[in-house]
Image (cartoon, rainbow, N blue to C red):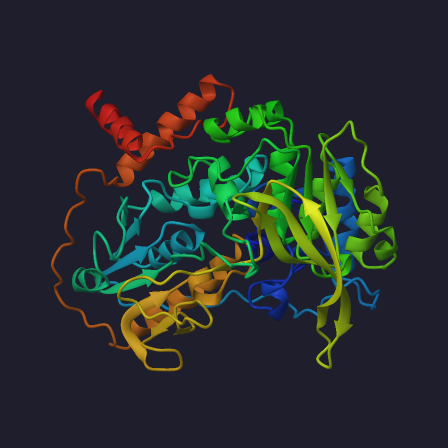
Length: 549
C-alpha cells in the first residue's frame, strides 16, 4: 500500500521534507515546482511510514486504502508523475536527486536586534514572518489594509474547500510567536508611508499580492452586468469591500471568460445547492442571495483546447464529481486526446445537458469579441479559434472569424491578475510587479537595489503557484534580507518605536477576539464560522469582547 496526495493539496511541500525516502516531488528546489499542479508521491518508493500525513497542513494525503471513489484518479496521477517512460501525459518529471536538499537559512548574530515590517497578511507575508522569527531578537510587525489577516485563505478559497483553509492552523502557530505583532486596518500610502515604515523598522517586506483583474479589452466590457470572478469570490467569502452582489442572479445563464481554477470555483459555488453551502463559512449575504438565484447554467469559455486548459486536474476532478450539477462538453470531437484532462472530460462529461439539472458548460476554442447590450449586458459575441503551434512549441489560439452570440445577463472575466502599485514603492508597469532580484527591490526595473526594501509572493513573481509556493518564495527573500544584515548592509541603529495602532486598528489580540467570536457564532449555527463582514462591526465586536472580560 502507498500514500497518495489528493485534491486539497496546497503545494506547501512540507511533506516532501518530512519524507525519509525522498519519494515526494517536485520539491521547492526543483525547476518544475513552480509549474506542477501539486506534489506527487512515488508509489514505488513510498514505504508507508505516514510521516507525510503528519506534515501536510491541509490533510491532503491519505493511504490508498482510504480513498473515495472519486479520489482514485490520484493514484494514477501520482504514479504518472514519477514514470520513467514518456507516456504523453504532460506530467513526467526528470530523474530526481538522491535527496531533496533543504535550502540553508542564513543566520545572524543572536545579539543583533532586528525589526521588520511586513506589508500584507496573506500566506506569503506569514511565511516570511515565520522564517524571520526563527532568528533570535527579531520583531515582526505585520500590517494589512483589511481588519482581518490570512489574505486569500480567508477571502479567496472557496467555502466548500474547507480542507484547504486548514492551513490557517499553521498561521495560528506563526502568530503565537512572542516577536509577532499585527496592525490590521492600516493601509500603506494612506495611513502610513513607506518612508515612515523604513524610519521605524530595519527593513520592510512587501507581500501585497496581485488583486487587480486583467481586462478583456473588448467593446462593451464596462456595461452593467460585467464583473470579475475575483469580485464574486470576494463577495461569497465575506470580503468587507465586496458585500454587494457583483452580478445579476435573476437570469438563468452566466458566462465566465477564462477557464482557470477560479473560473471553476465560481461556477461550482454559483450552481451548488445553497443548503449544502449552509454548513460552510460562506458569507450570510451570499447564501441568502444564492437561495433565490435563478441561475441554472454557467458557460466557461477557453481560447484553447482541453489539453491546454488552465484549470488543474484536482480542480477538474472536484467539479466532475459534484453531486449538484452536471458538466457538459458539447464539442466531443475535441476530447480524443490521450492527455489526462481530455480523458477525464471524455469519461466524466456529457454532450447535452439535462434540463432538469444545473450544469456547467465547458466550451473550448472560443474567444470573446464584444459584450453586447444597450444599457446592460444581453449577450456575449464570441469567435471560434483554431490552435497553431509556433516554432517555440507554444500552442496559440488564432481567431477563425466564425462568430456566435451567447445570450446572458452577466459576463464574468477570469483571465488573470496583476499587482497594483504601492505608493512610494517602485513598480514595473510592464510586468505589473514590484521590480526585484531574488526579492530585493530595485529602484527601477533593471536598476539598483533599494536599501532595506524587499518583496515576496505574487507582488514579487507574478500570480503563479499555489498557497504553499509562497513558502519557498518567502525563504529566498528572507535569506537575502538576513544576508544583508549579516554583511552590514542593514546598519544596527536605534530606531524610534512605531506609532501605536489607533482606534479602529486591530492588533493580534483584537484579531484573536474577532476570530473567537466568528467561530462561536459558527458553532451555534453548525458551521466552521460566521464571518463578520462590516469593518465597523468588526471593531465593535472586539471592543465588546474586551469590555466583557
